[in-house]
Length: 275
Image: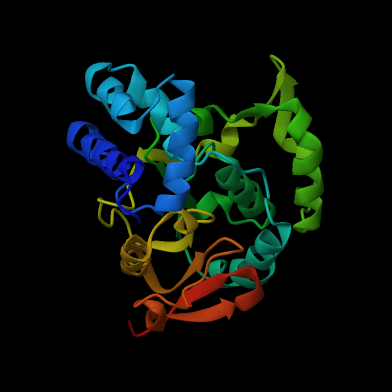
């Protein structure tokens, strides 16, 4: 990063956020975090990052809203259907041999990925033996995930994705239209624990058989990516599975040798049995 005034102020803002609220974005990709904070700066009517820092430090109502800019909230049910088809066809048969299963949806955002997996596990007969952990650092995102209500105009894309993922039923079986939105069946989350968890600063909280963390690592710098991937490796049981986003891989990670490429095209990795 250059040492221009804007970048200096940006780093001071991130440091202030960490010191005041313990949200640590200092290891995020600076190009991405700057782009999002420029939008926030405009929204809050601040000409500089220093003015935004002043608001963050002295107005307690600012940080919760700023968090929506700092954490990416873009997803959809069964996004990248091939990934979920890969989970269904290649990972589910392994999991069916286990008496109990734990699944960690890391960086669950508004819950779309969680509900996709909950539906998939129900269709594959795995739901009754599975516990899901859905984590994020954004309390607003966690509340949205727990509510399970999505806009009606998104359902067409959700339905098409579900079918392309190999869905064995109609997506309409899992929601009802009410209050201007699609309310997903509350039984889908009866085996879900929603929790605050940071990939930047927190540690392992459970041993799991599947971690799905998609389109999160792309916002981290290399050091932070390594930390998160090491945390995933430590959290997985032997021969557990890790699913990443379409633009993410383990190629340059120092933890790469702890995994094998289980389904390269679907970005699904399996932890080596002996590590």
